[in-house]
Image 1 (cartoon, rainbow, N blue to C red):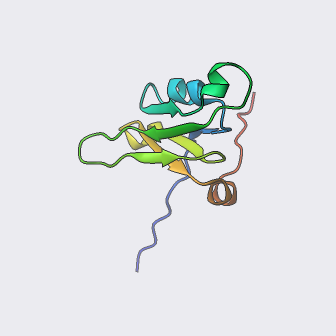
Image 2 (image 1 turned 90 degrees about the vertical axis):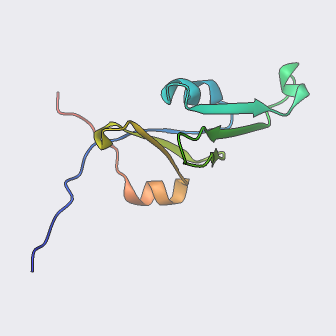
Length: 101
């Protein structure tokens, strides 16, 4: 019997805080999009009520992003895959990686 070990690789991730929607769009190179439902935020008197998602490519489906979720960019996949992971699962699987300087 053969055993195959999946080599770990480094991903990039950004947590959606509810108000960093423009940074998420930039992080995903425009693959994320959002809609602000709240007029009070536009007037500067409240936090935004934002609906956010990853746009589908090809036959994939739209992936919603909720506050606390992590948006993951995996360049090692060869396709620049963008995915969404809830906070609890993300923090149980991934550890912060710091390069040796």
